[in-house]
Image (cartoon, rainbow over the protein chains, first blue to last red):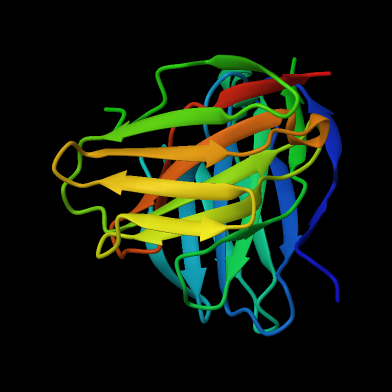
Length: 111
Length: 111
């Protein structure tokens, strides 16, 4: 059974550009969450979506947005990239329980 | 404001001995606690959890203890094995499906 899959695994962008990260949850999971992990810190909550509705949003600027599709996959979009956006972006899915299942992440480097 | 704190960034232990990882939290609304393990280039993997109505939960070599009055939890790994070398994250849930993570503790198991 496939776990949470994310793409791309690595990408390099320059300041001011836009990025789209993609996530497919575990089959049967209707909830998808996005976390940002900066080196040396724990993951920080960005968004949670359930049944295509935004259920929660962390303390991130409006440059960050996300959406969930009818098949429960999700996209995270970041506009006007800053150097500080360089991080590992983790997607997680869950079956409406507290336990999250994480993907391997998308490593974003902003130059 | 960091609501979940792991004050020991690293821990070195000999193979076969006990590893004890500590975690403190400040938010009294947290009612579910989890430990995740992370290897380099992989996403965090769920290890063990505990509900606030319990003070101990065991799963094989892993035991989590919760002291609600002290807002403290700990993870015990006995016996420690080389494959346990990883970063361990403590996480807490206030029943809003958003996990708050600590900064992590890097465990190194020496042969």
